[in-house]
Image 1 (tube, rainbow, N blue to C red):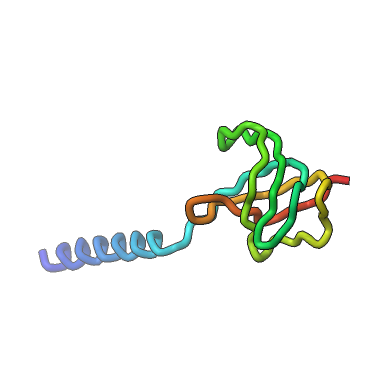
Image 2: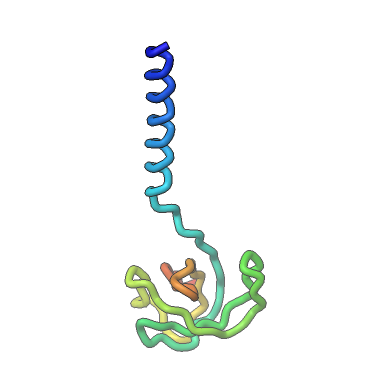
Length: 102
């Protein structure tokens, strides 16, 4: 009986420890792709006139985005067509990458 109790207790403890490890692992941030035209760049912000982004249920519009520190804007200027990747940041979204379309 004692061996059964120890075995059951060990199983419960192992299950709980694996749950706590899963709960503390950071989840991957969800990301979305878009295309648009750069209207203005004034870090840490960029204004894009972008096409519809169906996954977010956004129509085509012009709006400002925060630029992530990792987003390189050296190769783009106002008027350039770009593809971009964005993710949630606080209450809004931030651009994490920006690539000119040539």
